[in-house]
Length: 412
Image (cartoon, rainbow, N blue to C red; front, side, top):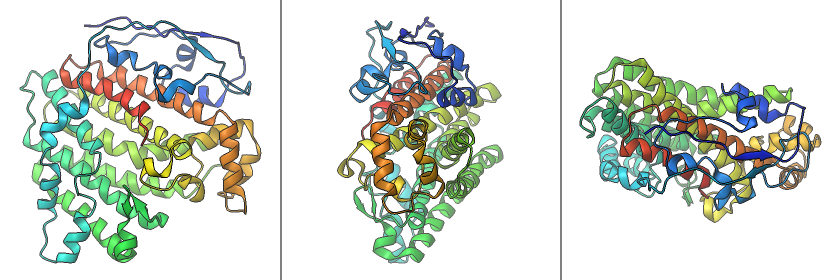
């Protein structure tokens, strides 16, 4: 049932200066003025999923927008009573579990080779200990689109294959990323490049991608092949974008968000679009699926960038402050640069001078960079909710709404 939803924020102070965050919200295609004035309408189930937008009431978000040290940033919103129902949304992981029970076994079958060393390398990350976050979204989106299209909610064989392919592409990209970054830890274990060497790691990543391509071809849908082929191109372009930066502050943030889409969100967005294509011919449904995946994917990465400053290494399964050490300026740093212009020079030289990493870390801790990045992630999740709420009500659709809250409140 469509319900009216109201942002219950009253601004404590006024500001006439356009901030970086307002520019970003406009870039995202939403009305920053509407967002900041504090009124809006969402169409959906009108329950806990929609109230998940007010993330600053959760454990992770208690610090979000509670104080501001600079007038360059947005004034503090005061939370008030939220409007929601007492209905509980289904846990996304529980709802998708049945379809993911044999995910890693199926992937290992796709990667079967007689050469034992190559098999060991390829199976290394497919040990069933990953979050399977991307396949979960794909499965839920497939079922939501099936219900929307008046079909049985069960997955089509091609949809199940796309969920598997999404995890294979993701894992192959991690193998290659670890080589590029020289990483020695991934998912709490030693990386493939550390165990077997960079050459074999690159070849293993290539092999996983080739197996994913063969599985994609067997689906037999040219449109789906075209959509998912875009993911590989975006991954490469995103990696090249990560090697550069922009002098202008606003161009720099657009560059950062473009890179974030290509490296992280494109896989989720195009996988969601692909499963919708298999069950529905309406381009509007395809766009809903794509936009949900795009916005959730960007929000997921924004939170990931925050965790690099707020979570300890044991939570992340990899060392913290990794991005700074790699010379990367993520959301918290770019926002902190508004308050501490000294960061500009560090960003341009990629934190390569002695003491840059430590000083940049300290500036982020003293700024509102983390809070502003969390707030931007909320903005993307709000848009994801708006998009998915256009589908007909179903358990899976509502689980995708709840998933946005889980993205914002995760701690690893």
